[in-house]
Length: 253
Image (cartoon, rainbow, N blue to C red; front, side, top):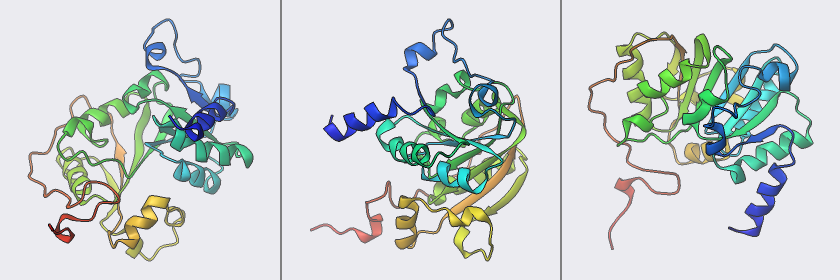
């Protein structure tokens, strides 16, 4: 591990608004996370709605939302602490009171949040997981997980460059009759002054420069015992991750 990463990890330990726990401790029933169900009481010190950003990366979106909406509390979640350090450091230095960061796996969030504690979730550019349904952050399994700690009709926001994930999510929502508040396959073509349009992450800017439109869905998560998976064939994206050119642009020498 590089000295730079080690330094970031060390500094993360000093930030009072960053929470990091090894999985083996969280899974221990005798070591319940002390703020589970009590984030407002024990950390934020208010009764404002709590919003999560899952897979927050560098924390740009978490911090941006916190600055735009001071009447809400925001928590960025990611497993990679070295990336999260940037948003954590910025929010610490700027003394932004309504933001926190949690380093853990998304699959373990029910250990950290209590029933009905979360009012909204942002999914910003998650891996579309084109071959693994169970790992898609908008799959039936993850929606059931979120419902364990979200309020009834909590808002879920998906922002993605992936046409595959956008199409899959729309099909799942329509099949299960979840209320879709808004959707678009080209967010920045919309003539609107909505504040979310003012926040663009570093990678989002680069997707846009490549001519890849940004898709967006906002829907309500109703608590269901059963959520069906759509049985549809969806064309895969022609690229796998940022930095790789679309397949049709590559040539063999």
